Image 1: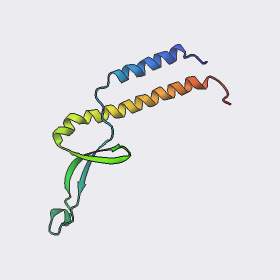
Image 2: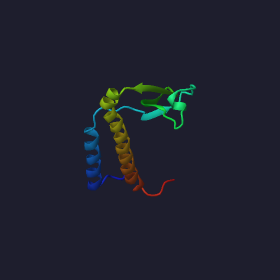
Image 3: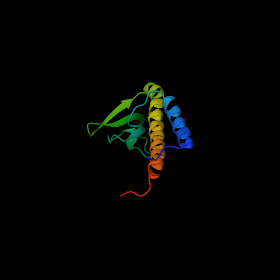
Image 4: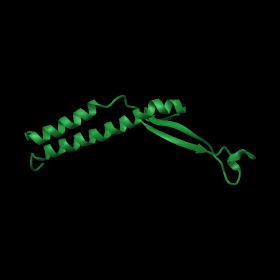
Length: 111
């Protein structure tokens, strides 16, 4: 079995330390959206158009189905960093996987 080098262990430790510093994390995507309602005489149908919004939406998958929630500005202010933490956690996991792949590749030829 290919053993991690000291440099590999340092890289692993650095990734784990950054993961440990993350706070709460929410899955999904935080979006800012505007929309046009289509009612005649509404400002969103005028020229130039002035859509309704912007509104904040949290979209994620639950049991294979897309679920969307509208969030207030206050909720976004509180939960927004949690979406950033989830993104950062995915990036750090990708770094850990890449490091692990480099170590595994030292085995040599794969049958």
